[in-house]
Image 1 (cartoon, one colour):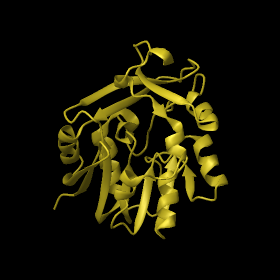
Image 2: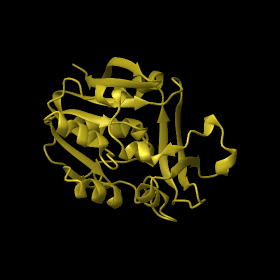
Image 3: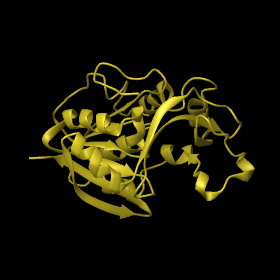
Amino acid sequence: MTLTADTHPIATFGSGGGEPYARALRREGLLQLVRADATPAPTTERTSDDEPFDVARWSAAADAADLTTLDGAGSVLDIGCGPARMVRAAVARGLHVLGIDVSETAVAMAADAGLPVAAGSVFDPLEDEGRWDVALLLDGNIGIGGDPSVLLARCAEVVATDGSVVVETAPDAGVDDVYDAQVVDDQGLSSATFPWAEVGREALHVHARAAGLRVAQTWSVDSRTFCRLVHTR
């Protein structure tokens, strides 16, 4: 599905169906992202390749790898912020920050903690558009909407001309895949189907160019890889 600033999919990460994402956030369970036409492995039979999401990590404090993405920023837009660990970290640094997420549960949890968050999509009109120093796409959020080039083009609009987009890339440097996905929790409850993408650091260059951006910096911490994209001149 192709996204524009005027349209975005109704189905989003973990929503619909049994609402596994919202349920996992409330009880800090495990989630598995699977292709919609595949059968998820039972919890007891998962291998390291299945890489289930531990939702507790999203609710915990930002770790050393996370914090590197805030270096040099004066203002931060966290896209797909979830329970807003990065928002909390940015607030602790005294930065102007806003987290956005389509999950009402995630936004409510963050708001209850007194963090600056808003419910909605990156494709909606946003506060301070065109003035953010850094836009974050962490935890696989380059997959939002299933069209990385369109997502990055939108991110290019919301950051300042001298700003940047920081993307956490997939562990496989060469992966560049778009597919229909579902989220399944550790009780076997499935979400509605939604478009998703996985992009490694090598493939990210192609999507960046299509969005009028270029990869200016790449770094790795604790087996996680990040790329900083800036506007082409």
